[in-house]
Image (cartoon, rainbow, N blue to C red; front, side, top):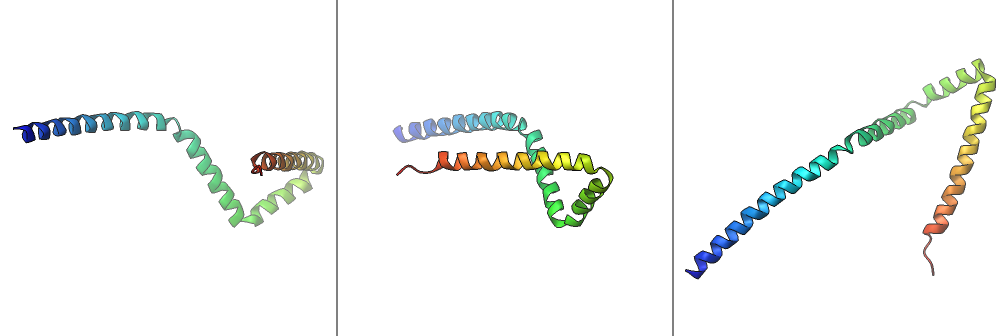
Length: 103
């Protein structure tokens, strides 16, 4: 009698845990849906960068055409990009110092 009662308790506990697991899966799926759009955008950006690496001639051609047709604007943008690159490098240095292990 005791063994059968214990088995029924375990079966009920198992069913309760399965229902709770199903509920939690629905909650996680709902929360993950919020990330769908940003992750899709990140995938598109990554695919674009892969295309640019695979087809550098088109990127170089577009930059050359812009430089020929709009030299002043191209130089202005080159200055902004150079400034951004320098800012990025400084930020990387600060982050490396911050993340460096303390001895």
